[in-house]
Image 1: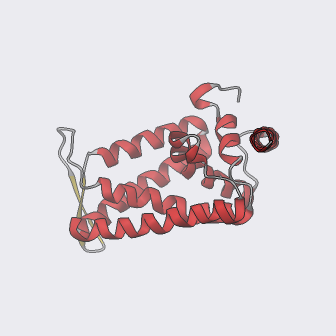
Image 2: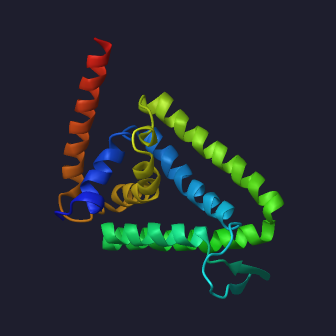
Length: 202
């Protein structure tokens, strides 16, 4: 509580929450955000390693696969550390999900090979992104957050939908009063957006 700047959890979620108020749009994001992250890691599996470290070979379901220390690993590490620093409990769960996605993406990518993997990644990404744009255009009636802050929207999205699910199902809050504080900031952000929109019209 009381953090500022990059680690201001209230500010991050108030920004993202301002673009995701409609229940259907939220459900669409819960469904599609993590597959976007996972398939991005599948794609990044084929980037060259940049650590002079031995790769680890594993056997899963009778199939061999290799964990590669490349951009996919680095993205997983950055996301995991950032999430855990925002909130120890939910952030650690999000970090664990990121690591599971990385290991799973290595397995899937290794089994598919580049010639098939990029096609599956492309189709999945298109379906998921189109679904989210439909969620914003049809149900939310507001452009996606990534049009205003691309980095924040892409980085926060997996954590946001996880925390949203934890709050909805279990009533979880990083600390008492977090949800009400964020909701007040969301309302203020939306009011500011509506006023600026009205000024442009008039």
